[in-house]
Length: 344
Image 1 (cartoon, rainbow, N blue to C red):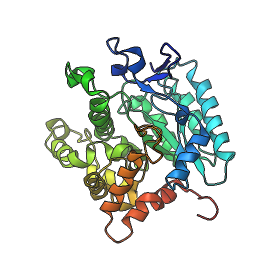
Image 2: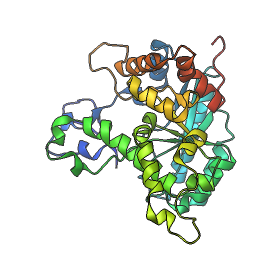
Image 3: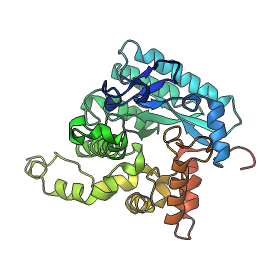
Image 4: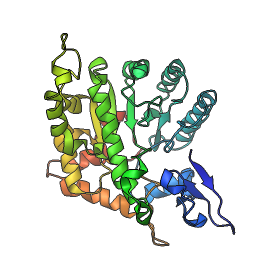
């Protein structure tokens, strides 16, 4: 369960969000990461947007969302948070802020479905952010089908984002020496890759062919491993030796990626952007910032290196035919139906 840690001597609070953060061998004032107003302040968000020439942003609750709440509490807090997000967006200049709503995934499926039908009608809500655990056993759980159906029938976008990573044991006994690098650089993308591949293998996109999903961090390692996944599916005896031929995905991964999937461009390098574009097309890759995570470590620095790396990666991937313009904004406008602020 995530929590805020108050170190002694009035030191700034620390956000404990990953299992590796809660290590008693780490000094209290160094555990997790420092948390400041950028995590909750709309004025800080708008300042960040102004500094980096961003006209429109999509807000959301950060991971792990409401996954850790008791089923009796989650629906209430989903209502509170989603209504507050909707209100915050409407308080500012039209077209400046939108949001992805959160879902009470520990609650009963019918409660989650009701939240989808309530929130998708709000003009500032442009989709729903979803973690990889689903209702607790992953995104290939058949119990999720009513939720996928509601998302499909309302034409609501899923934004799939990681949180849980991989078991700490895979990083070895010296993982703590490397801070957050292993879980964030490797654990998050692999978590995303496994979660999405389980959806694909279980036939989610066969049962719900109009389902729309935006995958964080350029799809994890899916762009690199797509061919290997496809080959393993084609050669899996469990998928080919069934009397009714119904086991395994019916649509190819290539078709699903082109028809159902969008990828964000938070991958920090040209080669990652190129791989994403090659898999889903340049009209289906969207710029992102990872804000408020990855702030500058230097005191007083206002331009975030994480933003610059992503912007430069998109620019370097440009082919002279408007690809960078599409990724930096046009694709999001088209997918989400955004109206930018006046004058932009």
